[in-house]
Length: 293
Length: 313
Image 1: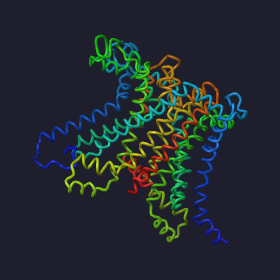
Image 2 (image 1 turned 180 degrees about the vertical axis):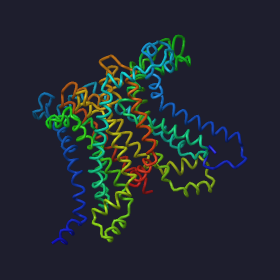
Image 3 (image 1 turned 60 degrees about the vertical axis):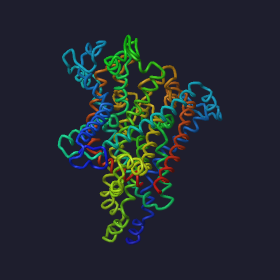
Image 4 (image 1 turned 90 degrees about the horizontal axis):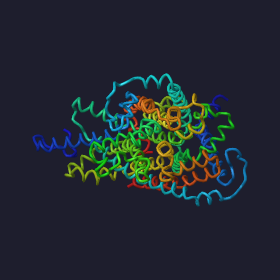
């Protein structure tokens, strides 16, 4: 029964009201979907349009008058560095996820077990570090990267991105670790485990939803990040997706709209699918990490 | 000997230090150090070519403060952020209510819901710079699909309300450009805010809602007097996220308008980039972006305090 009320309509109740509510519900959801997906729907249409079709003034931008063409997709994969952007982004993302987990899992555990005011302050401090915006740090970090000789090197991004993901992940994981009773660890110690083994074998498996949230969050962050990538990397073969696409496919005032929009859509769909699969876990992660943290 | 060693290794306090050290060291080196450097830059004459340290006191801040462009950037950053947060939190609340409504257990309903969820998540899942390129096309001065819809609805074009021009030229007019940027921020923040609110809603104990139902509380009464007060702490956290992302964001403005027309959509991050990187004046660039930090700090402390207080009650 698609009702909007918490009180269910009794069986055989006013049927018209029920249908009306159902329609209202569907309309509302459809409206939001359309709003959220509109640029992607347009991207899907434009990708296959010929230049003539795209630049026909007054014609419907949602429709084909010429035969749809695969020319622009072909162009994107063979004549641009799109695939190398995808590779660079993936490599960076995976490396940053690993670094983030290695740094934030132990730190979060240590902070979660610091009881009282200290632990609370440390959590607050982590969150405040997360607030230091890249816009503030990119100027000094740029100099550090140049001095380390890491300009135009993916290592620069792998080195710097955890500065955003570690504070947040630590803060989120603290909530998870707090929800795991210390008695479980004590029991493991009684069973002859060392503390390190107890952490590895007992605590980490229990924190899996939190770890998954952190992985998804961190990977997204590296995909989305724009400023550091724009400032640290100027060689086009090392560029990541977020900066490579807007800089390589827009030359001066010339916009290659079809490959541009196609490249955005091709990233959006797989990432959207992964997000959808992990949404429930993410919700669970936020509940434990943010609500009780 | 071995026993002493293992007791040492097993000491929980030592373990805490060992576990905390790498992350702390990393944050000190990659956040603390650059932050201090930014502070030093802002009171020096550092440029891209020459980063030698000449102390000039607060002169950079004074210079920046007197620039009309900076004032515009300051006002825009605040107004964009505040308006975008208000819109986001309203939309996200409605959406979270819709998505947590129990649905008929029909197969078609579940598939439909899955597709809806997928579409709703897309703005958050896509790298921002790529989806903003999509919006750049949506707001195109000649071929905007939005303008096309308005023309079809007879709202735009010769002899109509918004006519006689055939295009609104979204990013070319001050007010429309501002609205476009706020819209993109709302569009992009709503999914995350919704997910956070849904997390809050799902953590409400069901017996509380059952009790409200038994007591004869109707939908809106339950919503405003039970659900919303209970998810207030998490709503504040979602607001905080939105505030941070919008206030410090460069991507949307950089790709859509670069601050134009003139300085009508200039924000602090964009101005800092133009001065510090494009203009090569590291000192003034750092001074501009330093204005961001105290604001974020203040908002974070106030919202987190309110959130933890609301939780106790």
